[in-house]
Image 1 (cartoon, rainbow, N blue to C red):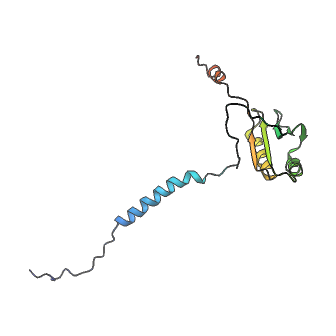
Image 2: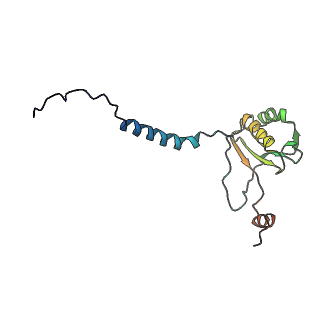
Length: 146
């Protein structure tokens, strides 16, 4: 039994185990980061509180009514002039905050378009104004009795 007899050849097989380990780690990384890469409209929503907010200062409010007419406070504005009007109103203001209200029947595309124009005007905070949530309306509309 000779120790060095003929088995000194180089091994030409690829070791697959490290390759599989690296691929599994990359798969996990992509699975974790993929949901974070979803793009959308950047909106800073107000924090939820049980009681209505009390504010002494007058707020700038953009409203869309049922017919998709746009208003800045009480003055009607066309969509093509919304950004320009907001830029002029916000000149010199340190608090660039706007509250946004939209009728529930306005198409989603119109709402997102107005929100994009508001953000393009340089608004830092865009607050969404809604009515209080009514649990009884859901039970009645879905046919449930409770």
